[in-house]
Amino acid sequence: MKSIIITQSLFIVLALILISCGERTDQINDLSFDSERAFVSYKIDLNGKEAKLAELVEHIEVIRLEETEESLLGGIGHLNKYEGQYVFRSGKDGDIYFFSENGQYLRKINRFGSGPEEYEYVNDFWIKEDMLNLYVRNQAIKRYDMQGNYISSTKVPFQASHVLPYEEGYLLDMNYRFLNDSINCAFVYMSEEMELIASFIENKRDPGFWISTDKNTIQKNSQDALLFRVMDDTVYRVNEGMLEPAIHYDFGENWYWRDKSEVDDSMFELKEDSDQIWFIEQDLGNDFSFLTVYRGASTKEFFLVDRESRESVYINMSIGLNESLPVRTNFWSKDVFIMNLTSDVIGDFLATLSVDQWSFTQGTTLDIIESSENPVLLKIKFKDSSEW
Image (cartoon, rainbow, N blue to C red; front, side, top):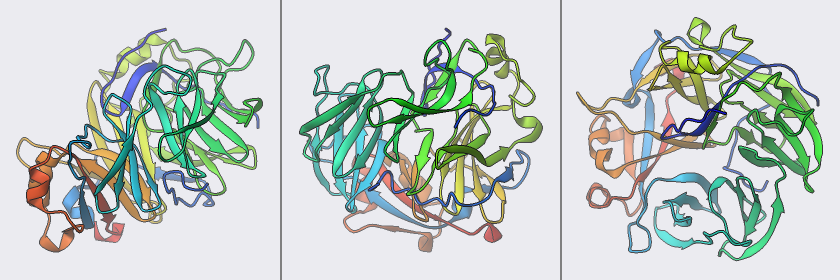
């Protein structure tokens, strides 16, 4: 099977989609999307409305992440909120950091290693019942208390790309891997004991390549789960054990996989010359969906969709003649979008905003930010689409 490494949000390995129907918290990233809405299709026009990020922002709160000898951060991964704290992974050595809402460093834990009570590469990370739950690919879900003490683990029998708890079990993104000789589905629903309950979206054949992303393709709120398969333009809802389409992102003729029902390795090679959209990542909130799309060989672009009005806008991330924001998206917390940004560009970005569009949280100043190499968190409130 062919594999390709893609940097930033897309990681390791390639596969594709052949769509058909299958069978039938406490706080998990503070998701607040309303999954009760009827099926809706959002038309995304690549040549439509365009705006600078500054033109779409109602207000941004900037949070510095305190730099100490114990909190020298790299990138930020798997950002969670827990009892007024930000909890996330950073660096390659397995550190999990805790910061206050104002960005004060609190502590870090580390159980990195290959032992039975340790973790190596973490695919997914959530907090439930005052426990850190880490899905370690090809191994297990490992649980620790908030001080890093090992509690328990559950072996995951399949090589799933992503895992998230759902009802009394778990949803697994199988990313075109065969479960066994007879079952090849995009997602499966497993019991707490990891016994198969249901499978969703049958794959008719192995396309010969696959792709995985570090963003969990499974999102959930208190009732339902939403599944967004890689290289798909449709989001599905799991409701009471049944699957139904929920959201469609309509790129029209600009969607590379449109009308491609039989796929082979060559099609992935050809997409680099197509200049069409071939991969979508969504950050879905109650009012907006923030899309990161990939087209052609290396083009990465951003769109904001107003879920109520169905309006969409292309976000121009440039902040100078030859400079663009190195955007790293994270998640929605109610109606606020939280992303992180490197400290070296924050001054130039704030200069594109009016003074009433941004503020620093308590303890944050521009001097402190620019004297640190730690990234900053941005809490963004977007304008209604009528103001775009």
